[in-house]
Length: 357
Image (cartoon, rainbow, N blue to C red; front, side, top):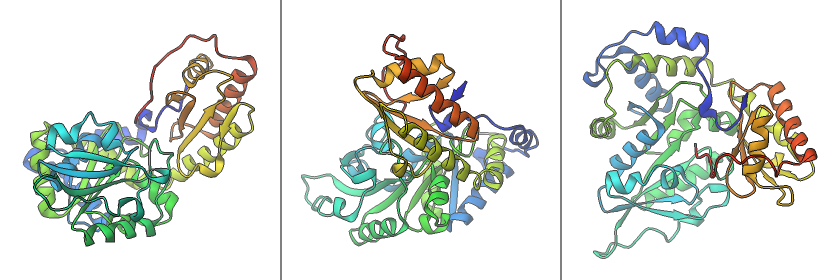
């Protein structure tokens, strides 16, 4: 099975498993797991920040970031396709008492023009606008990569308006590879940064929140409150260390494969794909309504050994990753062409909605 539903489906390599097996461990909640400590220290240094806290998932580290930056009754500003606002089960409201205000932004990337005039005035009737959340790369907005200048411009505006900045860096390293800037350059634009290791970097689980020493002290308390304080989690942190040392540069292969897939799909009549809009490892395309729906095409492809996520209506998303080769990409394009040429509307339907991660 060629699985392009998400880069979360990656499995640890034999070398990564060996690193996990060999990991030196201790009690992380007591600060005594040397492997977790090494991961947190090295990532903070890489990003030019003071400290970091290991978390179970990207959703957990994002919600730790919201809680660190906001008080109950505050609001955050985010693009209307942002993961924190859509795919985290109402976490800001439930866990932190924070309102989410979604703004429309081209390519899912907020600019100063989108944000100007949005912070609420200081008045007892209003919640306090406190936080701006960006996503790099964007997810369902199209896998786009912020230019560094745009990040710096938004960051400067936020600080001028006494707002804090949080980055949902679920695909942080995809962004720096595609964007051509460093981890520290991007991190300098934010107060807190969430980085996920279970996507393109190929780890079985784990994320890290990075920021100041004082913010991470609070984040560690929030992690405990959320049930995320772990014990011998060095077994998982070892996978993240291996990924940092071995799997970052190879992300370019995923981006190249995504570009190849978009190019092949664009050549199929009835499939609307734009290679020029494919900037990272996410390929979005649409099925002509005369042929059928995204769910119907996904069902037909699954019977041909290919899994691609329907995003609702006519839209589909394919995510390239370390378990997908160039040959797999070519086979995928052939499978889509075969479905289109033979028809697929009579296929059994599977799934009813978008694959969010």
